[in-house]
Image (cartoon, rainbow, N blue to C red):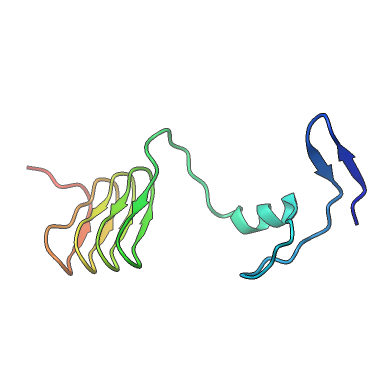
Length: 106
């Protein structure tokens, strides 16, 4: 039940928990958002992660996964081909269906 509205700060207080599912149009409250995100944190001023491949995942500052079903995890990790996995800061993949783990040095 709504118990108060502060118009100057545009905050709604005392908001009950809304439904959290694919079809819900309910508002959710701060405790619901906290419960959903409490184990995920980032501390970086770098660029956001980018996942452009179909069913790809990129996690970490400036992580990039560019092809289908690729996964890049770590600061600057790059999964460049289909089904690649790049794990760790600066990791890159060189050919389809490969794994990169750790920074490459010349």
